[in-house]
Figure 1 (cartoon, rainbow, N blue to C red):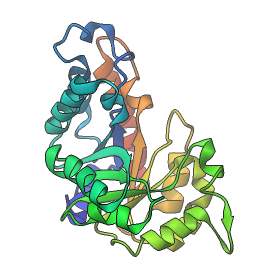
Figure 2 (figure 1 turned 90 degrees about the horizontal axis):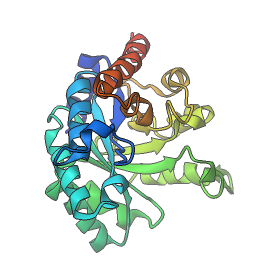
Figure 3 (figure 1 turned 45 degrees about the vertical axis):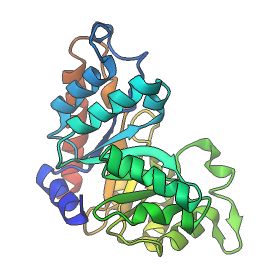
Figure 4 (figure 1 turned 180 degrees about the vertical axis):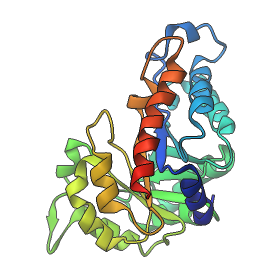
Length: 267
């Protein structure tokens, strides 16, 4: 999916919502456990009930990899069920020496048909560029995360700037605003103004709204650019809104609340 299509979808749906399908097989409603593939059945119903309200789905691969072959099967079926006009993000946080990263890129962009993949920048440019070689695909680089451990490295001062600022400034030159996004956690709202000075045109994938306490209002006011430039992710708050037979309808209701609020910020 290219940038123009993504922006068109945001404006059409009046939403920059990304829904995280971080599906834990121990947390899905009990009545689904008799299905041939309970995880896929859960995801299918979530997608079918929310696809008009969001512009992206983010699949954290850890929840699928941990289940072995069955998990990968659930992942593939889930990706294939997501409509083509919705961005499909593999939250895999890969990144290794060049030839290994090339195989990771092939895995997610060719074998599983994702539109985007999250990548760790620690090993530098040669570990990231294989992902950037794909046309109309997105590399989403970890910038400033929402976890408490961000203070261990990301927020550490390095001369005149902090490590995450050096990552953003340096990595912005590896790709462009058309194929490179950055992860910035919603709980780091105070940093968004400074971040926008470093990467004014890039999209930001923002996890941490909802269960982690990030403010959609703060993010929208401080980080939106002329093309909106935001994908705000909510996972547990939406997909685990209910554990009853009406779980998908309840998930839709929460997604609608996010979309309604986003619509106000897009005016």
